[in-house]
Image 1 (cartoon, helix red, strand yellow):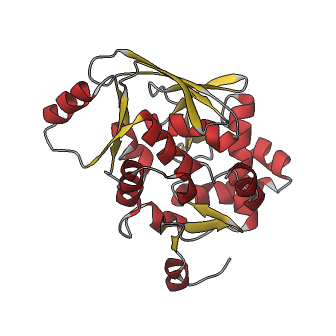
Image 2 (image 1 turned 60 degrees about the horizontal axis):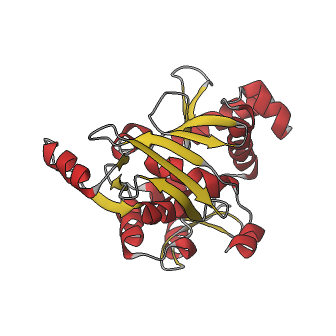
Length: 266
């Protein structure tokens, strides 16, 4: 897709908010899943301005890069670890030299992170190889998610259900969430008062800027106590668990989708 920036930006006002067509018929974020004002506020805060995520997404990947991106994300969950260049090349039926180049392109788009000077994948949203405190059981493996929203989004992204083990950032109380309806709803959560802080601090790489501050809290009281304890007042949105599930679904639901998926799942 070779379209000018102006043309891409002109098409963003779709389905109730800014969106980019990441592949034919697939828009990101998917505003159709957003039903609450808090989730809408969170997404608008995230994509606002040319320094936000829309700036990264407004240049769609070519077919080979998109294939590599989707392939490595599926393999990450299938195998419980990030795949190597050779493994991706074999799975995607591409030359390994092409895959090496594409991995660096994906890193420039802030879709994955590589170990400096290598093609070793350290993270590929929503997953990371580093213990993050957000453990997601999905399929045959349990994986670390980069942040609370990434953890909640994984089920809808992979069209399955997942369970999440995390903890309150303020008091370390255990937090458990399980999804239903292929990640479109909550099945159970504990404690029932748990909430999510969705931080807007984006600086080129979400994993190094906003992700560390997108966290679970056992209650509004502990979220407020944590916010008051910060030296610089964070900018973001408090979300209920259901609202956070919507935000995650809007951001990650399109990642592995084709146009037909939206007709099936809505």
